[in-house]
Image (cartoon, rainbow, N blue to C red; front, side, top):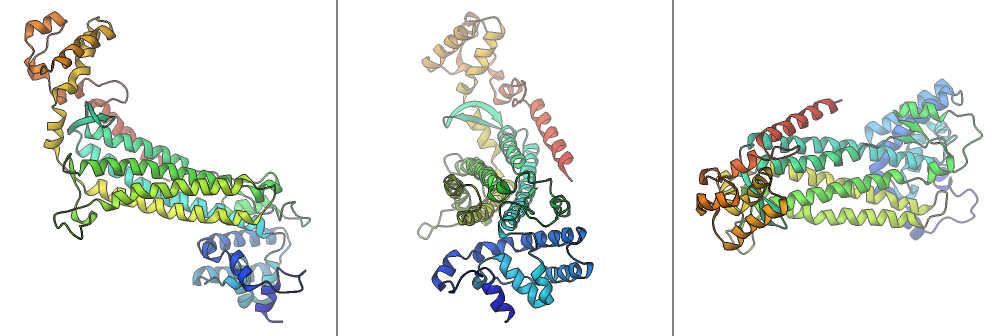
Length: 452
């Protein structure tokens, strides 16, 4: 019997008829599994090392298997749907390379624990790629914050001008959010290899040795849970979806800022697109797609949770459907991070436009309230006094000195500037120059500490 025939029938030993072609196509997972090829080979190499250490494989057998697996890893492998998944495709190719010894590879292993490992390794790789990309984006935010630390603009609540803040304050707010995202993309790697189909194995293996070979952080505690667990996939897709939400918020801010109504920034031609009708248009389409694709990531999280919610204990083929959300979300979010990085790095800041917008005197109302509070006036009383001035529509710079004295303040028109307002916001995490310098220093120190 040929190698192809033996492999094709290997999973149907108890069947008298071959699987219908339409059913074979329906259950095949090779489209997703091509993303898992390297993870599968790494898992198999670790498994071989463990089998050899336990005396289940001879040194010669292990060497031949390693040589074949490394050759597949170097050459790559086009997955054939006829062999259903990455695992059987690898075994088929390995048998072509090393002969009968390839049939030893699956000793003390099931596709159930194998695919659980492959997906875990793939998630770890995705986390590392995203964390590296986030490093570039957060560095760009800190660099821009430091370069434009003296730029002031209105801070907004409800999309209404609220109080003056520094541009650095806004950029560092996104840095803080993305820093939390980066931390969520750091899960322990628990090796499920050795759990078998669901009950472990009678063969004297050492799953801890396999985990050590993989550089894993731990080993499963229950074989049945090990093949069922996809919590790590949910955690990754959730972290990615929340990251996509934060990227969408950053994109929305930049989209508003580069509109003619704001005109706070300009994006370079290389990051914008034109109109098929209106030759004057320069559209921030890439940022709009960052915003739009966040919805896809949220949808994949719902997809994944819905797949898992009705499953009984143990491996079920539904778990095959947990791979596509991980693969799609990873690619989508990684591309969005790179787009946002380019936008932050290459945007032109219109500092005078920002300052003019922050010079609206109504933005200093809270400063005046807090001055009264510092002179012993109860907050609600101070709020009412300044509120009366706002309702009268009188510019603060036009209020006479004797009226300020009546209110309990001494206000000079030249002190009503966005810079003066910002200088007073010196509480922890505030927007004063000193606090911004502290935040920038802390961000750079954290980055240095986290470098491996």
